Image (cartoon, rainbow, N blue to C red; front, side, top):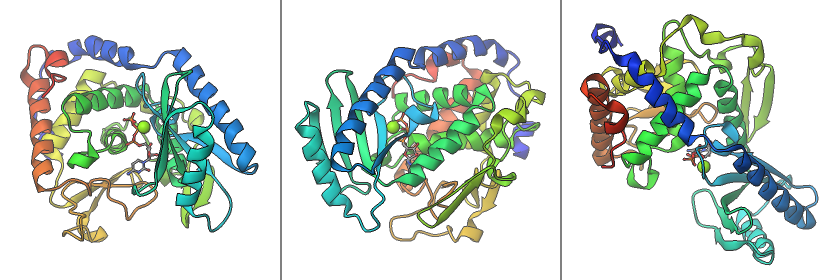
Length: 335
Ligand code: CTP
Ligand code: MG
C-alpha cells in the first residue's frame, strides 16, 4: 500500500475513461435479455411446481447480482425445504422433468462439487445451470447486488476486470485461476480500501437484513439507498481505478501474509486463519475470504504454476495501464 502512494500514476490516465466506459457499455446486456431470462425462469417455475409444489426457484450469480455481461448463462437455485434431501436424486428427477418439456441439452451432473442440471432453452436461446439448496450463493449474490447499487464505479470496474480476465484466460477455476465471483470480491475489496473509501463495509454496519443459512449467520446493512452517494468524496475516474486495481494486485498486495476480506472491509492475517500452509489441495497462495463461509478461500484453486501466471498477468496489466499508448486495446489482447 505504501508502494502505491509512492507510485505516480501517468498524467494522462483520465483520458482513457471514455474508451473504458464504452467497453463497459458494450458489455451491458440489453433489456430484452432480462425479459427472456424471466420468461425462462417462469417456465422452469411452472415445471418444478408440478413435482414439488412447495419448492422455490431463485436466480443467483451474475445475472442476479448485476455483474452479468451480455449473453451470460443464468444460475438458478432450486430451494426444497425437506430436511434430508438426497441432492443426486432430486437432480436426476429434475433432469427427467425438464427433458420431457422441450428443453435441450439437459444434463444431470450429479458428481460435480456442486451437483447441477444443465440445460438450454431453444425458445430464448439461454443456457442455464440449476443447483439444489445452495442458498448461501443466493445471499452472497444479494450482497454483491447491494454493493453494486452504492456506486456505479463498482459495476464498471468489475465488468472491465472480468472482460480482461476472460480475454487473458485467467478466469478458469479448472485451470487454477480465479472465478468471476472471486474477481468481483477483489473489486469490492479494492474500492473499500480507497481513501476516501468508495464502498463501505456492509457487514460491519448495523444489520438491516439477517438470515441464517446452513448454520451461517448472514447479516448486513442492506438499505443502501439510505447511504446517499457514499463514495462522492472520492473523485477517481474509472481509468484511474483500473490502473489502481492492477497496481494493487501487481505490487501492493502482500501475498505471503495477507487475506483480503470484504467481510471486515480490510485485510486480515493468514496466520489468524491458519492459511499459512497447504492443507490437502488448498494451497492459499492468494487468499480471498468468502464473505459468509469464512473458512472458504476462493483462492484455494490457485496452485504453484497458476499463481505465477496470475501475478505476471497483473504485472503486465499494470505496466500497460502505466505506459502503453493504447491501454484500452492492449489490455484485452488475447493471450
Ligand atoms: N459462488 C459461490 N462460491 C464460489 C463460486 C461461486 O458462492 N466459490 C456463487 C456466487 O453466488 C456467484 C455464483 O456462484 O455469484 C456464480 O459464480 P460464477 O460463475 O463465478 O460467477 P458469475 O458471477 O455468475 O459470473 P459469470 O458471468 O462469469 O458467469
Ligand atoms: Mg454465472
